[in-house]
Length: 213
Image (cartoon, rainbow, N blue to C red; front, side, top):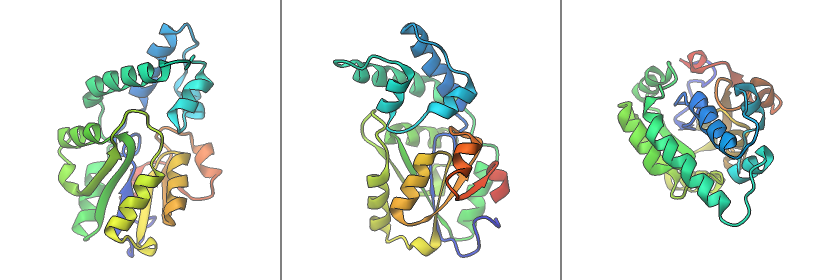
């Protein structure tokens, strides 16, 4: 765990893409919606280049007409499809072992996600790793606006020391959250953003969780 370091006592984990390998599912779901709107589908590489937070802006860039209640309709549809099909997604291969290693060292693991809390809890339980986490923090709506405020509340609630806390994610948004919290950031390059976008941020980037275990 050279990238983490022996001094780390708290690890804040992103969920989608970082712990759960759900990129292929997310590409498939958005392409179904694009097809229904008569819009061009995305390759996995194109998806990783364009995906971002807040999700509403990402939908606009894809060409969706969000007038009226359209964003609400699309968000509800995407979430329903995701919750139905996400149990078929695997964890990133190294995730269970790494979580166990950290917990055995006395490190506290947390989940911080822009996804619905109920969805995260259900999937963590499905994969039998829910007991590895001290707290699971997600949103209570389906708009995926972001998670800076949730992260600041988590930090305050547990009195997390920036010197002993690291955030592990897979997107530029995770880096922005880490900066807002004043904690170190490690980004994994096999999730929802491509390696070149992550390396441009200047933080530690690893190819997979295997480099941390």
